[in-house]
Image (cartoon, rainbow, N blue to C red; front, side, top):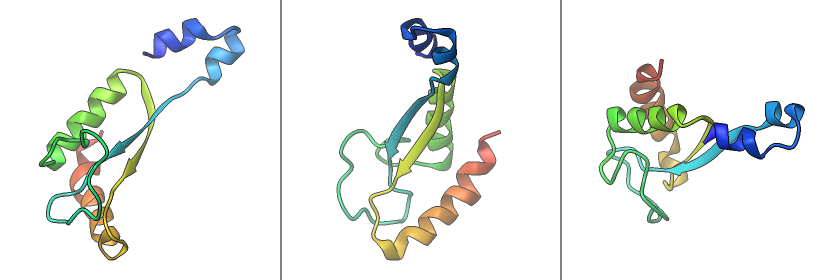
Length: 94
C-alpha cells in the first residue's frame, strides 16, 4: 500500500509526506458496546489482546503508520477500556 501511495505522489517531497492512516473499531472483552460496530471489528467479533495486536501488526506490515482506535463504549466504561489496551495490548506491540 505504501509503495502505491509513493507511486501516486507527483514529487519526491510529496512522497515523503504521505502517511497511511486508518480508524479501527473494536470493543474490549468484558465491556459492553454502546452501539454496534459499523464493520468488522479489529481483532474479530470476540477480540483478545493477541488478536488485536496481530491485526495491528498486519496493518503495520502493510504500511500503516497511524491508527485511531474507536471504541463504541459508554463514557463510564472508557477508563476500563483504556486500561485494558495499556495493560494487555500495548505490551504485545514491540
